[in-house]
Image (cartoon, rainbow, N blue to C red; front, side, top):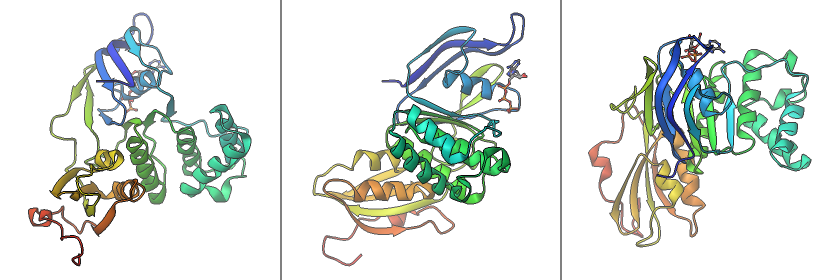
Length: 300
Ligand SMILES: Nc1ncnc2c1ncn2[C@@H]1O[C@H](COP(=O)(O)OP(=O)(O)OP(=O)(O)O)[C@@H](O)[C@H]1O
């Protein structure tokens, strides 16, 4: 497997005689994967994320791979002597964007998170939640290959929380890897490719699919060219894909990711025909929903 980043026999302790926080940790982070890290308070989740973001070095073991990485820390230093727009524009130029493009991209991310109204307010005057919007916007500016989120949803309002879930889905659909910690067990429910619990200094993979069932699923019926394979971004984003006729698919996707999958279908070349979208009621699609799609030309 090609890995964006790999931890091999990694250990970390603070101070020469400090207790080991992590020891013998092996973790491969492949492109396009979403990984959730869980664990009780103080077990070493943030320590692990800082190692993944390469902001900290292991005491022993090796970290290999150098994906372009962005990180949202548990505590964002909000009182920076900038405005959000000025700060993000500056970061955009650090990522190699021209000043004009950096400013436009910064503005777009601030708008997406509902922070456009205070783009020019000094950051020291922003509320905690507003600062957090700047923190998440800064991580997404450079389209990172690895995005590391440490409780990044904390303090965001509902719209911004949903927007961050969408942004995560966009990153993984584009082939980026995302590793996150969040106290809400329903966060991105059903979508992580792997969930690990930090326990006794090690990483224990969860084999029950995570802490929540698949979450509400949207059903999408789509048709592409006969014999055509699903566009890669759509295949990556969908929870299930059933080919019911040549080029005819019934896809299920976590509701938070449905617009990503639709975009992947509609922007494919040639574009796919979306026959039907059934948002989740309060249940996931039943087996009956997975009957063959209508023949071309018949009414959906
Ligand atoms: N810079 C540091 N210096 C000394 N000890 C540290 C440092 N950072 C973390 N620790 C210690 O390492 C242990 C793990 O801390 P860490 O913040 O990684 O855990 P966590 O699982 O993220 O905790 P929480 O859920 O409370 O955020 C704790 O005992 C903590 O006190």
